[in-house]
Image 1: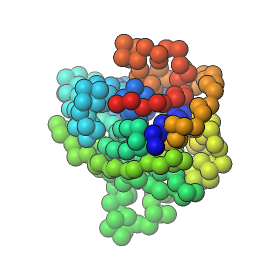
Image 2: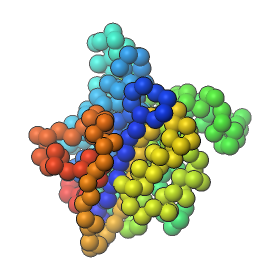
Image 3: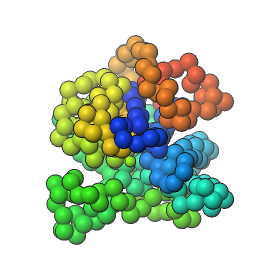
Image 4: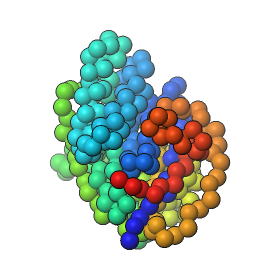
Length: 282
Ligand code: MG
């Protein structure tokens, strides 16, 4: 059975920060979706996350497997940070998934953005955070419940761009018709518990609306960080596509959020920013 993806994405500055350092990428031509959460002084964070996604996309389009494309993105961010004193020390998380039309997903992952798989009414975290509190959980020094409230929960132990070369986690998942994936930055998961995320994903059938509602939930809980959410529904290619809807203003506020290259992606300008229909062809 051939599978395709129905994708809804949203990014938001939140209620506290003065700019959005998160970026996301949805490239339906090559079947590549990613979330990046940048960090660094001046404009470093937003430069790092956008540069990582652009380098990732170019490398992937050129044929690199996902882990290699993430490594290329690491080196691109690192080289830019070394070259520009204003960007020194910038870095970013990166959680990137490549999809083929038989439902084989390969994730490359660095940092504390996350991928979740909702299947058969269960929500499973697919990635492992590269964070201090995750290490303390593994060492038996913190419970997951304590970690959710720990003030050190945003301290990450691995990021893209800090050094030449980075260790990339690779996770493979065979997707099925009816699966729903969530890629998100920690601005969602530090604000909204996994039970609430699971309940919302189960309640809202439309991927784009689910993404908006998750962002709204994070903002309602305080919105202390930038929030980025990509919801990906895996559906049989035999099922009829839902009609397009128009986008709201949120995507337009973040021109870096969807770094579509018009030369590469001629349909990008006419399509709503927040929703793409996939018929994946590799
Ligand atoms: Mg964040």
